[in-house]
Length: 415
Ligand code: SF4
Image (tube, rainbow, N blue to C red; front, side, top):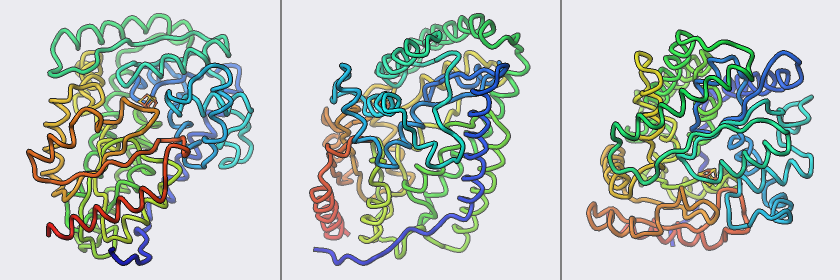
């Protein structure tokens, strides 16, 4: 068995700036929810945030709150409260922990930000089923609870090639939501404002991609675990100047590391790819576990999900429809496998770790033979970890540790 040594991933200096802009975001959202003339929209993580922002809404992302519940390890104890009102332990544990937190009147926001007592009350809730149906049920429950309107984009799933038919139907749904959103926001839709927001979103996306792509360097200047933290602004602040400014700072730091051949993990020996959701309550443990094996998890599908290359301010609605349909999670296995092969090649991957998340089949790609097919085609070995994004009862820490160590031994033999 490989000898374990304490090895911590290197601290990213830009974290200080990120913490500040995230704090500013949450305080601004909280004060908007408390004011009588500002409006709050809830949006699914890959929902049409740009439309909402262009209409002057302050935007809350329940999945971000769900991830906070996971990362603070509050989620597992809260899930049963949602189960008790009929939401199964088998469905999305973001949904169940978020509903549970609301029922228990607690939020990790209060722990992190003094003075914030609640999640922001929505004036409208907007989702896109491109990722899953759970967001519809999740937002529907809260719409009922807050007596707020619910608006959805109903999208295609399992798409092989994104065709004109897909783009037109999604673009039409996005255009149709403008009129009701104008009424709720009290603002008139302005195409130039949408173009401005979309162009900032595009810039954020481009910079975020460059940040993630620095991991192609050997040694890699960042890990998947850093990515899960530093993706915060790309999720909740896309479409703003703050996110753009932040990623310029982060990128400069990572490029400096690349120039100095400074790896995120000491003596990087193995380069891994993480497929699936993070296990939020175990980020630190997993980061240390892989680092102790001299393994750097350099890239992931998850962090790449906030790259929207198709955004084009010359064609706001069709380009948004395209970008939000081209996402990995929306696509067929065939397309996903092509994408994975590109990633394995680009990031010079030695092994792929699939996280089979019990409550998120949508982001678990190890159930229908994909690891075996890809392994056969690329020769790159894979490991499946059973767990969950938020429900830690679905994870065996001992089993995960043993499996990772055995996997690294397998990679060592292959070197
Ligand atoms: S994609 Fe998975 S984790 Fe995200 S909201 Fe849907 S079921 Fe939950």
